[in-house]
Length: 149
Image 1 (cartoon, rainbow, N blue to C red):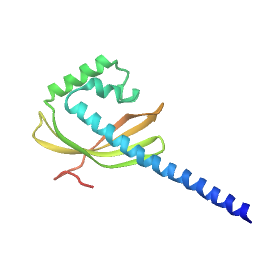
Image 2: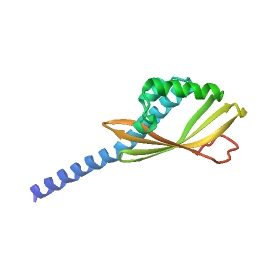
Image 3: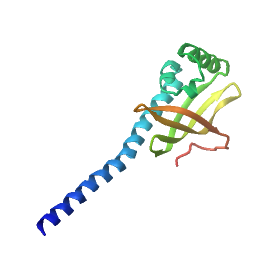
Image 4: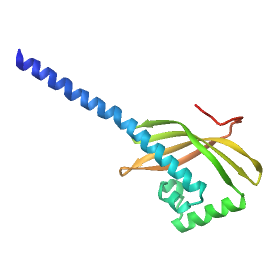
């Protein structure tokens, strides 16, 4: 009877640790992705496209070298007179090696002298142990204020 109880307690402890590890993994990934999202936002806001390049997948690089990527993004931002004012994350959904970040950006450009807010969904993927931005979807929705959800 004593061996059965010890075996039961050991198995219970073992499965509790495994469950905590799995649950904590997604929470830890969310914290990591939130920090990466902020780093990426800061890089783009400050027009540091070399840093942004290192944070994206080949899909986002579209076959461009780092130099070409930086040159093209600097040209786009300059010609469109983009000024990113603010941004943030409303939620992060992690599913294994993929994550979706619901975010918003407040920016002005050549067509919008008064900054507007755009919602987006950023898709992050885990590649060789490193989270990389793989795709950004800009949602064409009317927004009257900064999203808080």
